[in-house]
Image (cartoon, rainbow, N blue to C red; front, side, top):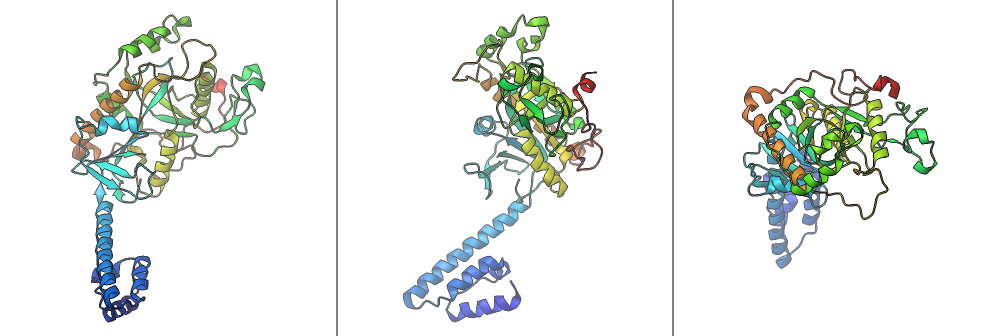
Length: 410
């Protein structure tokens, strides 16, 4: 708003007996113009008094809101925890939590019902149920967490995996699986590929994200000391995986562990032996054989795509991201038989998985906060490539060429 316009507004307001705080003139033209229009109505008598009081209240509220926004813009979090639905936030927000999120900051534009970001009293840690320009995130660590389906060849329900790769496996052509050649394995074919087991000829950019393995290794080192929880129902369900052919599913019968393991993202919740095997091959092809398919997900590549965009604008540091998934269910049944409805996902793994997700992430958070000034404020320099399939952040990814399944498995 120009100085002349502000002076003109003040003069008109004065002529109508309305006092406008000088600080209000410094605010945006849109808000000042709205007030200007009200002044131009030139009320008289009792209406003047009522409008004067109302405008005074509006002006004070407006100033308070602007001041609050300015304060929020200066909030600097060391750690941001992202959970992907309410059940996963319960352990963090419970009164018994080791971190007390005593403050709430409402952020316009977030999903309905999830407008509030929960923040610790000192502002060091924030919890959001899936940022916002109200925070300085340039030094923040992002801990992306969620429950998942688990590959029984890798581990079992209740386990927690720390990922280096997130692979979006549903950016493919899909054919009716009943109408494809038997050697395909599924109805999915990468876009522009000559065969199902070939790198796509058309890529979009969100197919693969690689994260800082040095940060991941640190997180693993502290999280492996956590005493993971289990349940009798989960243990009973694990026993169904015993005596698998050639012991291929022996890992599914063991107790929960913390491990390295990568995540496959898909908008479709898939379940079954054939489709899980097909998606594992896709992950190998997309990452030149590097990804170890361990957990399923629906949100991770979308979250990482958003963070990559923010990193390209200098808003966040992509090397400060951790991706953690805990296993609430298996990605297939213990028997390769037709499925029944209604589909029952929880076989005793939901409770342990949400609790173990909290316990391991908490251990990592405590470590970062303890060594913030000596180690983590400056950041842990990545020793590997980080970023997307295009090399948008610089460097050259070790994946993305025309690798096929023969190259991946040697």
